[in-house]
Amino acid sequence: MNFRRCEKSDFDRLQAFYQFVSSHTPDMEKYGRWIYGKHPTDAIIQSHIDAGCMYCWEKDGSILAATALTPFQGNDYHSTNWNIDAKDDEVLVVHILCVSPNYQRTGVAPKVMKDVIELAAKLGKKAVRLDALSCNEPAHRLYEKLGFKKCGVQNWYTRNAGWIDFYLYEYCL
Figure 1 (cartoon, one colour):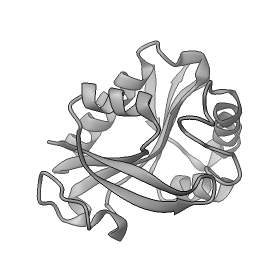
Figure 2 (figure 1 turned 60 degrees about the horizontal axis):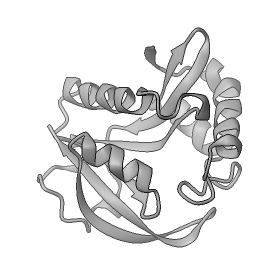
Figure 3 (figure 1 turned 90 degrees about the horizontal axis):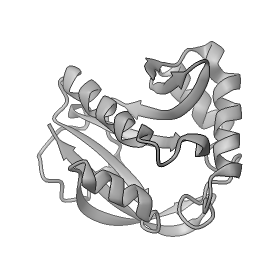
Figure 4 (figure 1 turned 30 degrees about the vertical axis):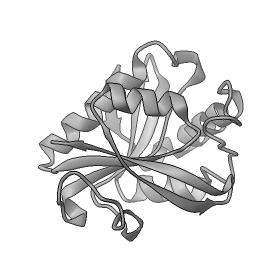
């Protein structure tokens, strides 16, 4: 499985990948609540590609997983009681992470997260942080199994789910 930063030429493939994941993931309406066009959107994907923050994992020319990894955290993360004190640019934040339904429960997700942690360490970050819908129990199990600690809960509004609680996780490096 090849891990790489996405290029502008990858947009159409990523768009199709996220559309497929949104519409074919079992229990998406229960756990992820993604509705392509509301979340994620073409604009979100394009902005992460343009910023050099979009990554994918491929095998035999197919995208198995994708995520955006921003080298900073936004203000919405400031009110959480994190385990480590870090400035905004001292963390790597995971966004729009997904694995193809064809490769879920095959070990791809743990490999993806290990690659993310290794990248954060290589970039000299103090922590990897992310948020997950409170109802996304499979994601919680994955993150906790990999050593992420739940540090808080935030109630945020999203176009696809309305007002909903998010669990905020941190992996200290």
